[in-house]
Image (cartoon, rainbow, N blue to C red):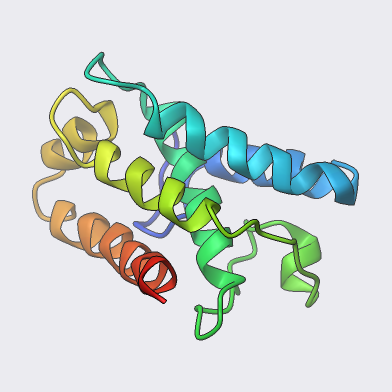
Amino acid sequence: MGTWDVGPFDNDTAADWCGGLNDAAPEQRAVLIRDALSRVAEHGNEYLDSGEAVDAIAAAAIVASQLPGGTAIDSPYAPDFLIEGGSVAIDDDVPAIAVQALDRIVQKDSEWRELWEDAAESYPLALASVQSIRATLEQATIQ
C-alpha cells in the first residue's frame, strides 16, 4: 500500500475507493459508504485487512464531514464531488456504525494498526487522525 501521510485519504487504497465513490451514481453513494463501514464494524475478531480498514476510515471521514460541525474535506484524494461542495445524504444510524468501524480498526488483529505501529514515530499521528474523526462521529450519536 502506498501511503504518503496519516490522513484518511492519504493512501492509494483510500484514494481508489474515493474515486469509485465519486464515479458512482449519486443515489448509490450512501450505500457504498454504509457497506464500507458495515464490513469493518461487523468484522468480528478475525484479522482485519488494511484495505478494508482504510476504505472504512475514508468512509467515516466522509460521514463526519457531512455532520453539523464536521470537518470540511479538502484533500485532493477525496471524492471530487465533495471537494467541489457536493454532499451525500447520511442516514441517522451511519455515524454509530462508523464509530464501531473505527473502534475495530484500532484493535489488535488489525493490519492497519500493525502497519502504523511498525512506523513507530507516525503511529500516534495516524491514531490521532482516526480519533479526531471518531470524536466528530460520536458527537452525532449523543445528540
